[in-house]
Length: 227
Image 1: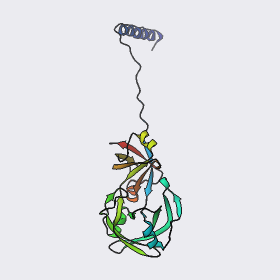
Image 2 (image 1 turned 135 degrees about the horizontal axis):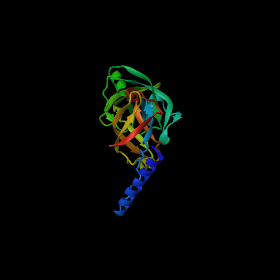
Image 3 (image 1 turned 180 degrees about the vertical axis):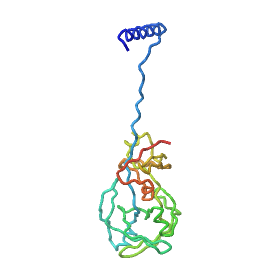
Image 4 (image 1 turned 45 degrees about the vertical axis):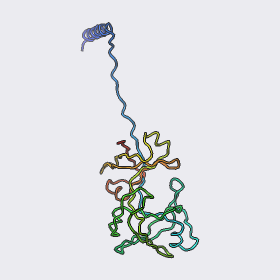
């Protein structure tokens, strides 16, 4: 474009703007909307484990037994050095199942669905602590064994977060959200429970079956999606 053409174009633009201004209309610069930052949550993959009462701990490991912390977890919990063997109704076993401490009011075994199939049991998908009517399981320790009529579940996928995190994400305790996870095998999980407590560290917990399905590992991230 020649200089004369540029000058003409400029005059035309000025004239148009002048006429628009007479009617109280102004040409505003284009608005570029920023994409909101993704609400990402670190992923923790939960392998099979169990929680025990003091009474059951002593049956399994002997009178006066205590748990010995191996690795600190959130909210004062820890992975203990102590492990047990679990036995299904078909008498198949899974060895070296780790106990998480401290001791609880009820004994609870948390498995992935693949583990349950191996043991010939059908545990329900439940929030931790909800064991009424759940699957039976036998637990064997170095000093003794115990049979539970109920107490085995597949843990419901969930996100731990503090009150501050919940405020930042705009969610509340027990709210149900969705997440997107993975890259090469990217997928979406629905029905993810939010669990809020001041002692919690921001982390989503899925079991090994869920992690393997989408090819994800610990410390990767999920994108939270409000439903």
